[in-house]
Amino acid sequence: MTNSFTTVGPDLMLPELLEAHPHVRPILDRYGLRGCGGSLGPAESIEYFARVHGVDVRQIVDELNAAIQDPDSISSEEQRSAGDSLDELADTIYRRFFKAGIVVIMTAGAVWGAILLLRIGFKGSFTALPIHEINAHGHAQIFGWVGLFVMGFAYQAFPRMKHTSLWRPDLANMTFYLMVFGVFARALGEPLFHIPVFRGLAVVANLAEVVAIGMFLTIILKTLLSSGKRLERHDGFILASMAFFLLQAVYDLGFLYATTAPGMAPERLLYLVSVYQAPLRDLQIHGFALLMILGVGLRMLPALFGLRAPNAIAVRVGLGLLVCAVLGEATMFILMRRYGGPFATGGLLISMLLIAITSVGLTLRWGVLARPTESDRSVKFVRAAVIWLHVSMLMLVLAPVYMYVVLPAVESLSPSGHRAVEIGFSHAYGGAVRHAITVGFISLMILGMAAKIVPTLNGVDIRQLRSLWIPFFLVNTGCLMRVSFQIGTDFADWAYPVTGVSGLLEVAGIGIWGLHLWRIMAGWRPVADAAVQRPSRITADDKVGWIVQWFPATLPVLLAKGFAPLQSPILRRTLARAVSLRAAARQHNLDAEALVAELNSVAGLARDVDGSHTKRHEQQDHTVARSDISLPVL
Ligand code: HEM
Image 1 (cartoon, rainbow, N blue to C red):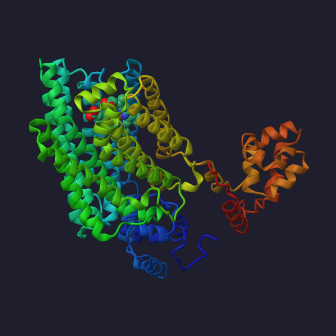
Image 2: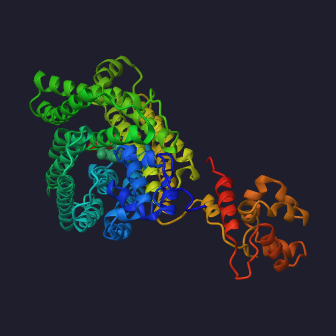
Image 3: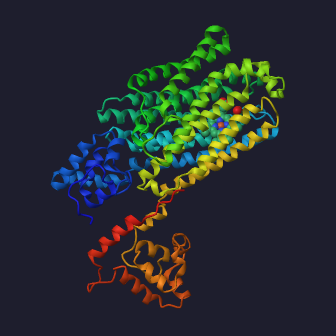
């Protein structure tokens, strides 16, 4: 069976190809396979691999067929390096970044955010908590959640897209330790800044992050240069995003230093925050995260899910507009707060409008209007993320209408709603817009993309995995509750406790998703995989449910011996998978060894004279196992 084909077509799955012709691996490595998916590669077809890696499928198929006909065309040197590349640091480095990202969000990130939100809910005020605690959470999310995922993904995917190797994986590894130190030391140091040593710790932490991000940029640029490839349209977005990543880290260092200065008067702190904090968030969220997601999305979403790419001119113009608009948004806000006047206010409004129109325009066919050609568990996350982006952009451009038309027109406002009208700024509305984009858009996109990438890189067939509807539902419901009821606090105080509990739903959803991916990265394989790995002989310790699945010919024998529950397909897949043949035999007063021999015999696994089982039976097993795998839908 395994060596039965001598030509390949686009539909052949990589594991089948590599199982039958392992010597062709260097060809796939050349186009960026490398350690992806382990020794047999990911569970994807040659056509899909070519699409995702940006190669002409006919070219790959021709090269593979030529190598199958003439195995000597691949040098032994190439063969050796293909084997060596399987466990290289560069191929697995993403794991530590992703795992650390999950740890951050489940500690200093979302979990801390949920605790802050519960306290806000109980106190009935968004301004009652110390700003340094809130900012430490925001920092952990941007650097530790978004930043670590982006870095891990870039180290893994960028060299593959460019058909080259990562430049200096050892330095990339060093950026990991610098970032992790930075995120946790800052989370500790910033809230305790009034103790000098902790302020110092927070500043050093931020410095470490600036160095790490500078190194990250250098590594990616060197990798790009070493590939000798031309820049593609989406690369502009990715490079611009990385520049914003560095810029915001430097800005953040200055902001941290200023807002933690010893003995500062509260009015001065309020002034600094009211002038300089929003531009920092603009650089982080619209500059770094939005541009990165757009760049990766333009390259990957059409290839992975068949989502339609926007036209080339829109992409080129969109990049220029977005970069100018983000810089404009940040600068005009500072000018407006410091000097006032129609120029700065108008400039800010135009910048916000440009960001909204461009980002919605570029993603128009990825949300409500999406027509994906691949049905995949990640598609719903991607579409929901894009819908949240559109919601947050609509809310952003409607902010003046909310402030100057809606709020003043409503008579029964809450105390915080009245205050918003007085000062011309609603903290509740601004926070809701931000949460819609940070959790709704950015985080759902990370959840969806990682749910696709992690199994693929670990050689797990995604169709055998849970569809992740529960985390999807929890995160979306939590986000919807937060966004709507946070705005509701401008109108009624009872909305505070409701928004307060929304964080628990989000944390639960992200926790379930995180555990699922962590287990895959740690080597866990879905149950159906066990069916593929059926043994070459049945033993008394095998579970009855699995024996029947591996070797259907054993079912009539077991039924005839009184194993009546096996008549039910559901019991075969559930209860019977927990009962060993030995235990079942004991229950029915049967001799376990005699039963084992009989089952091996009907399964065609009887030993030959030399002790091995026959080739004919091996082939039969293979076919049975492949066709009999049941794929869980949830
Ligand atoms: C998933 C659950 C999350 C919860 C429960 C949560 C909760 C909170 C709370 C209560 C605040 C302060 C409220 C306010 O000032 O309006 C806050 C602020 C912030 N959050 Fe989150 N958050 C979550 C996720 C995220 C994510 C995923 C990000 C980034 C990707 C993020 C970034 C921020 C930032 C930057 C701030 C500071 C905003 C400012 O400048 O005032 N949060 N979060």
